[in-house]
Image (tube, rainbow, N blue to C red; front, side, top):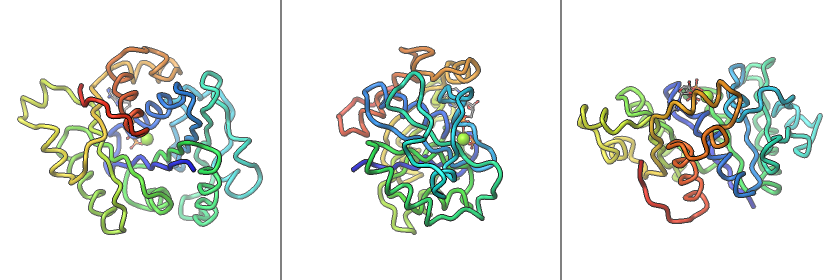
Length: 245
Ligand SMILES: Nc1ncnc2c1ncn2[C@@H]1O[C@H](COP(=O)(O)OP(=O)(O)OP(=O)(O)O)[C@@H](O)[C@H]1O
Ligand SMILES: [Mg+2]
């Protein structure tokens, strides 16, 4: 039985999509069966971070509404065990049948080791679509005060709805900047009330890889962000891994 993680943040632009693609690629490198679902209805872009923008892909509605099966999900040309469903562009998220979405996720757990839901920013219908059907969350924040405050709010909301397995990913970390503003990763954990899953450094390779249509783990195998994604992926598999930048 696989595990489903929703990648959430509250604030926009914290790096949910980049983190989702990075961790999914790291698991696929280890031949884990991974399904990535872009849940940013109307504003999809997970395909870009996965290096799949040229690959035709079904939307999750095509599968949840029964026109296709999970077997038809797009295959990654370079990671044979990674599959992808994009977000629909022609249906407002409020009109999506959430029960059918949940049923699709239950089926996906039978065929995949990991299912990742790339959530939209905010705490509205798209967030609820992602959070209703999973108990595991990666809460992505940047080191700025607005992102941390919003992450704390999301953490509270999840706790209120009984979701306890929430882990923090602090993205775009620049040690010099942190020391200038006297912020530590412990402070971020305290404010959000969540244990740490990993720290991803500020790394221009993430933007460059997306611009060149390549997953960052292939664009720069040993860049700091790629190493961070591999460490987080190992932790998701229960392998004790040192926390470092
Ligand atoms: N660790 C990083 N280092 C440098 N740039 C990064 C890093 N993480 C993300 N970025 C850049 O930040 C921008 C926003 O990232 P991304 O789209 O992953 O965020 P998001 O949280 O999914 O945004 P949205 O809320 O709009 O869905 C992108 O241009 C991406 O390349
Ligand atoms: Mg995104």
